[in-house]
Length: 70
Image 1 (tube, rainbow, N blue to C red):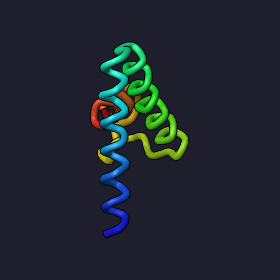
Image 2 (cartoon, one colour; image 1 turned 180 degrees about the vertical axis):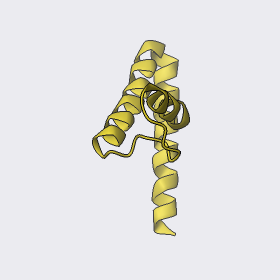
Image 3 (spheres, rainbow, N blue to C red; image 1 turned 60 degrees about the vertical axis):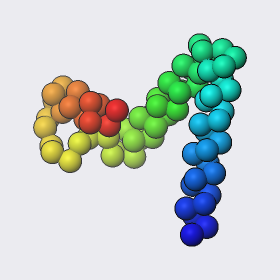
Image 4 (cartoon, rainbow, N blue to C red; image 1 turned 60 degrees about the horizontal axis):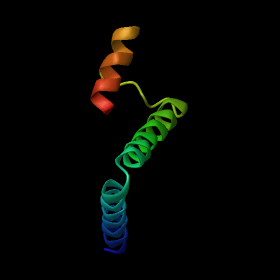
C-alpha cells in the first residue's frame, strides 16, 4: 500500500512539474522530457536489456526494439 502511494505521489509531482515547465518555457519541457527518455534508453542499453523479446539480429532488431520501447 505504501509503495503504491509513493508511486502515485511521484507521478503526481512529475505531472505538476511538467505542467509548470510547459506554462513557463516549452523548450525547457522538451529538454526535460527528452532527457528522461535518453537516460532511460542509456540505462536499458547498459544493462543489456534493450533488445525486444523477439530476437531479430542486426539493424532491424535495433530499430524494432527502439520502436517497441518508445
